[in-house]
Each structure stands twice: as structure tokens, then as C-alpha cells.
Length: 172
Image (cartoon, helix red, strand yellow):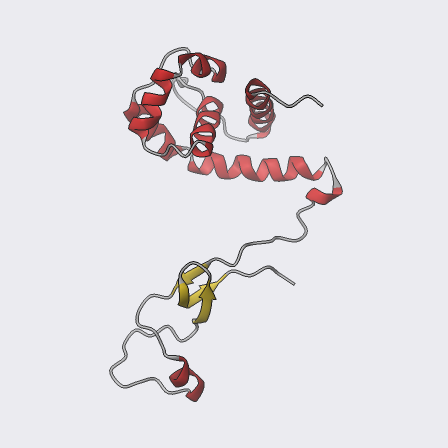
């Protein structure tokens, strides 16, 4: 069985993004981008897979891997400040593109339906002081404890240990 190549993945993302662009309501106004949105989305995805997050390191990677940069679609190497500035402006576009990919994948197989949303059990600390379990069970807020979040609860994380805050759970 043949495995997809790097160029196959790049072509797939470009094809899906072009389909996404056709369905977008508001096209980009003004001067056309030197580096198209889809090019930067593919590039930043590759950089995240390679765990290269700093823009200086990304720029260095482009300079040392010119052949791969051409395969991705770069005609010239952008400056690191260009990468930084454009990355910060891609947030809303990437959110819409991910939603589009979810709708697109639903048509492929029933396993990709989005009727049920699953999340991991990520824990988020509550702001303010902690409310000890014994006081919480007794319904007693200790004197002098200010800005207490009474909706939070205690959860155990395998990584962080006991956390007073909130957790996202899989829906039942």
C-alpha cells in the first residue's frame, strides 16, 4: 500500500482551502497578499507538527529547507516579522476553516458526524483562593477568605495533582 507523500498532504490542504474560499461570504479586500492565506496555514501547520513555534526558528527553517519551501508554495522567503504579523491575523480564518473541515468530513463517513462533541478532561484553576474540602462539605466559608469561587470544585489531574477549579468532561 502506498503512503501519501508530503506533497500529497500539501495538495489536499490547498484543495480543501480553495473549496472553503469559494463558500466564504466576505473575500479579502485591498491589495492581494504576497503570501496567500492557504500557504501560511499549511506552513504554520507543518511548523506545529515539527514543534517549531518561534518565528525566528521558522524563518531559519525556511532558509535551510528551500526545496521544501518551494514544494509548500513559497516563491521567496518571508521575513520573520511578516510571519509573526500574519500568524496573529489568521486566528478567525483558521477557526472558520476548522469548522468547514468538520462539515466536510461528515459527508465522508458516519463516524465523522458531529452530533456528539467530545472533550478531554482538561482542568482549569479557579481564580482566587482555594476552598478546602472539609469547609466546602460543611458549607462554611472561612473568615477573611475573599473573592472565593464557590462554583469550583476539586479534581485530580494526573499531571498537576489536585486542582481547585473546573474540568471539561465527555458528555454522556
